Image 1 (cartoon, one colour):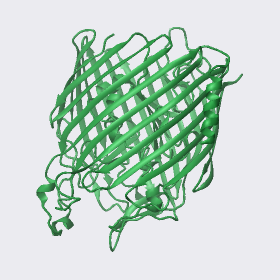
Image 2 (cartoon, one colour; image 1 turned 90 degrees about the horizontal axis):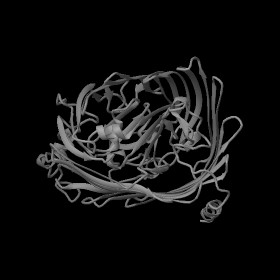
Image 3 (cartoon, rainbow, N blue to C red; image 1 turned 45 degrees about the horizontal axis):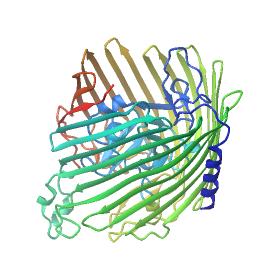
Image 4 (tube, one colour; image 1 turned 30 degrees about the vertical axis):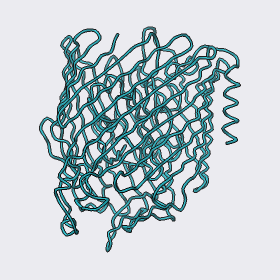
Length: 635
């Protein structure tokens, strides 16, 4: 492609421009405001696409660090995200099964997933496959709640989840982990990272496997009349296996000029119930093989003491193959980014260009199999005295839906050194997926090529308190979404088709608290929202109006103990609110024991009360489970 060659050539040329101080994505002397001597402020990048102190962000952002990831036990990113503020999930069974994440009540395909800045997910469904991202490959997660199309383009109606993988620094360091639990669950992983001279490196490999539980609770009534129906075929356990490799290689060409290569490669096999139907596509041994892969090359260059340029060429794949039914859905997204971060006399300026090509190769016949989006974006954030500002503007030119302009405007005021008030308004949009537009199968399920793009208009107010290990926040949000797309089964055939409503509205409150109380660490959050289809006055499917989370841990020298409580209200499985999903509460426990400086024993027990609950009608969830492991991390 011409544009790729042009941008790549510029990256190479800029790599030998005026030398300056070396840059790090989390410690940029260009962009990061000075901290109090001895202070180590938490920093984020997702809220503005630039390095920013977390306590200066005007957006609602949560950070999940490596310590919390290790506490979460085995599993995927979805398992950990399900326990975070503003997040609800649905799942068609146990580990690895098709799942949906609802961020701030928005649709499952209203959240963008980034891995080290690269967009990843299915082009056909529009959803990120978080159930296939193993925790073993994740170093850090940032959750941006609220519309972010002005930063990241189409689909960021509910927010953005960014996963960061490990980067090497310092002397070579080896790490390893192994563990086992009930349900035939095992997880093993190892990695090495470090740096030598101009070279930095990190490599991690891991395997996770579980026998799981039967995906379905039992047959639907209609299944009993099917020819050759055998309920025993749905009674078996439906397991899951994931093997992953992650790598990061960096080379400093000159002070302030670095080339990076990032790789994430995940292969998984997922078994599920074939409907108890004894046919080539049914039976006990059915499932799919999946591939999730990100490859990216970056050039990060300090052009002048106040100007940093980042050029990225990336390819992301999301592929699924049913190993008995024979169906195949292969998504590929090729991405080009040129972002310029400039220090101004007041604040920081961001100017960027992004190009995205989306392609699908499938056994399903799609009328259109590809589209491309070219985008220009600009952002500015600044602080002066007690005042803070953020402004972002983005223009997306979609080969199918034409031009879209989105914006975010935010203002904050520091009432006291510890207390801040802020407010923002913003717009977002979601282009219909290829499934929405063109999907068709032999069962009569089909898309609608006449669908319009969804449009969001959001406003929010927040009050945040942060001092000496204690933080608290109250946030009000109101997100109106025009042309919301939902799939529903319509009589008389009950085939699934996409429907477009006049307007949906998701408004509510988020309350959060966290504190270090001596040897105790406490965190809690409450979500109170009303996710509603205003054209029908019905609650949006699979989203509760209330959810609460509490986590408490304590250290006793080498021993750390903790517990978690998660509770959610009732939901409905369908848009018509005919199928109720009851509310539920879960209790989890965990313990860590430091054998010595480098070795640690870990144990986790989830759903210790063995609660029977549903995340999707007719599908099982895990009962009580226990996992024990040992971790080696030299210090």
